[in-house]
Length: 159
Image (cartoon, rainbow, N blue to C red):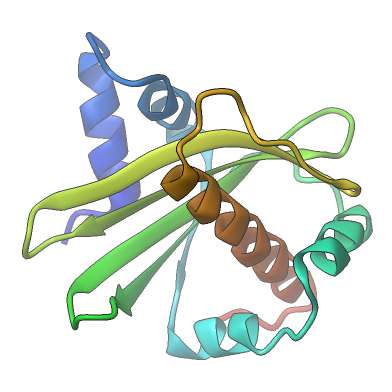
């Protein structure tokens, strides 16, 4: 099956009329360290009990990324739709991360997003101009997933 990252890269190759978020993701995804998360990884990520502010404070404890990272996972949506969630981060020189998100439903051939970039710092996230409420919810959730995945990866707790 084609990955969400591959779909974004292919869609971004056309460039003409592509939304800024798609172009942004398509620019860095070819160089990203791509990881597939399994059910056990997702369970460990979901087990984190801290709130968004605590997660953002933990950003400073993660070793600086040397290259972008992209995580994908097969998930089942609320109504039983199989989807592939993709989210990732690009390192920023000040230690912050620019994050992005996309989700693809193969059976429906439908993409949600892509959304991004949104800057995550140790003190919070600023909502980018022009971002819809739906995109903002997804980007905030993405920040939590990415930070928890990076913490677990550094600790050797991802598959």
